[in-house]
Length: 100
Image 1 (cartoon, helix red, strand yellow):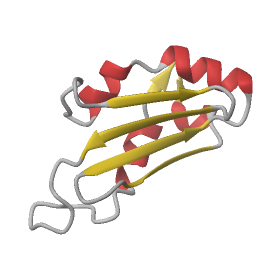
Image 2: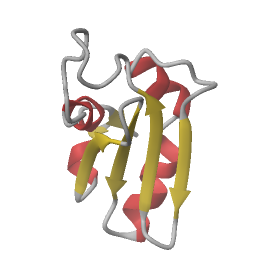
Image 3: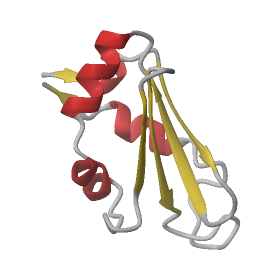
């Protein structure tokens, strides 16, 4: 098992408006993309972020060697409950996920 961050070129998360986050996994090669695409379960990502798997969206883009997730923010951006205004910390969590 290897951490996602050690297989990929970059894992990035950011705002996609005040209600959504987007997480991009830049694989860098076709082999890395296949490994991530096949080894990273959508349900595992939903569980990691305590998101409803029905609202989590996954996009596999083989032409770009990118896997992308979009999910509702746990708190609306800028509210008292929001602990990450820019959504950047989500990438760190996902980067630690182990891939076979």
